[in-house]
Length: 441
Image 1 (cartoon, one colour):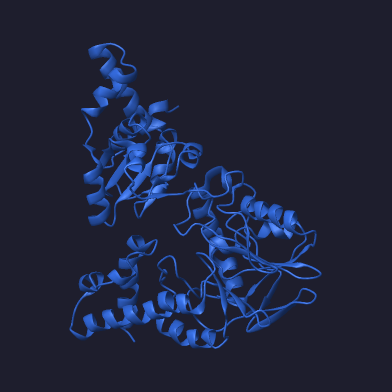
Image 2: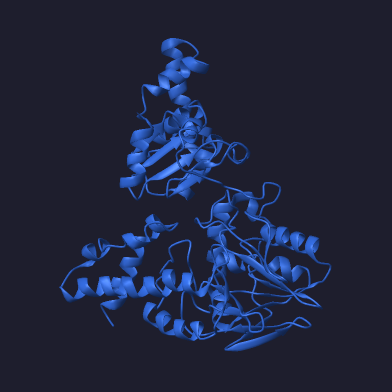
């Protein structure tokens, strides 16, 4: 039988290091042990952290406090790419959060007691570029630096509870950051429309527990039953909660291309979610829609008719919108973005998305509930969706026309959009995808 340390090599390293220190100096505890650790790690101050956030787009800043502390004491450092990863979970969750061992990383806690230990652990796990922010969160916050709220619904797995957009239309606005364990995958909007006889939910949620939490909030708002759930596309945060709704006897509706995505890739999508969400993934199982359509499907909620529309290729296979003509409101899903930089995937046809946008704009919506970010209007989503696609294609097209290569495409100026969430994660990837596609157009 293998030894404990051979099965868990990182823990073995930690035990060996602790034993060596005990042999040389006797048992080290508390501040004495912390002093030893601080001699092995790199500590930085506020000015250096500000510089890194500004100049190193791939930087990952990790808060090693418990989620409850982060929520109770003012949030976390707003760093472009930030993660809550409690010190006790580093060995287990870090490989799923940050796979590249050379990624620049800064860790911190409240008062610089746990974060040095976390930095030391990461170094022993093989991460090569780890620093500790020695001033701690409270010093950062009290000096007026930018902080980010991590949970607006501390008594729920939802990131935010539903808010009413217009009469009868509600949306639980998700985080605009990538899906994480901390936000439970609620990084998109989970919307619903209340009619006279029933409720239409737009997006099933990232997992079973998240879908159940949304349903609990709906039941607090209205006694009417959920009549159907429509999926904006086949991405995990849109569809993985489907089996919860089906267990309640609620039919799940999707475009035919979304159904294909769920059938052909559902297992791998759910596995990625399970690695990220851990125990929060329980009860979530792959499934397929109960009903599909190709171009249009009307949902009669009694007094309100909602049109589910496929307008053409855009962000993902099977992207649909929910259009309410009488109210001039559209739940756009991933057709439209505005608070976070839109992602471009291998299957995203940016040229076709721009063409589809004309059909979308022709609806004449006055209210837009996007796939990510708060409710807004057509002018705003046009600026950060259609106009961004046109801008990026023009910039990359100039590189191609000049005989440039992919490395030059990476460097195209996307600074007008640098204020958007997920910019640092997505800007280079977007340029990569557009360059590769436009080479063959």
